[in-house]
Length: 309
Image (cartoon, rainbow, N blue to C red):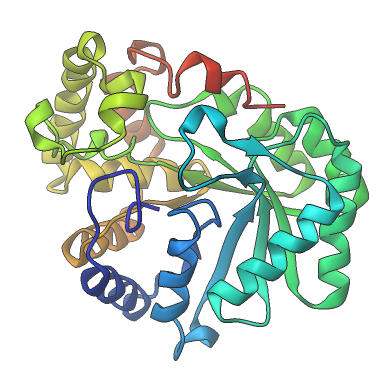
């Protein structure tokens, strides 16, 4: 996502080099969405993997409807079967591939029964356009209803040391049903890395400063203190705070998908897969970053109401 939008300007050459380096390191699960850009991130990923498609487990998403010229408040949602088919065909064209390995509904459309949406996604599987289907930010009841129509391979939701609401219902439901959990923003949109210590560290136009409550002035300092506690734990292990945060997500049994635009960070992130934590170490990490100590919601209130449907 960040290679094309939201987190400051991108650099296509560096982005493609980063994707190639990830593949070289054995990081083969790539996640994108049609609304990133919008549309341009799928094209970027398609160019990057053109000669390496067989090495990649490719995931993309549909449902968020964007007019490039429209403000965020005017974005819409569509989960109707006609749109499912249209969106999948458009994503296949942009990605330059004949199949999507994992196709997610990005957000649940409250106006369309989940059975209808998943039924249309299941048709894509039958047609060979999609291998597996998933949901993103869906509630436990919706996950159960969807899974009854067609096996849900994965549920993607935000999960990190400072975003743990999934643990109440969604994670137990997924474990019960044998559904994989994909954790987006496992580094707290970069905050848990310790690389951001003031507003001056962000590029102009970075949406974290304008649309992320945890980065707001009244919450920044409090959350920065949590990151410093995490960095103390990282120093005890001679690793980085980012690597500790990713290892914690791995320990939960989820697949983290940290985003980066630079080769040096993809190398750092990939190395976290080799860091195995004991239960005692996990407890130490969770004392450093208590779930109830994070200041601010993960999205503005208007957006929070659209999650977990």
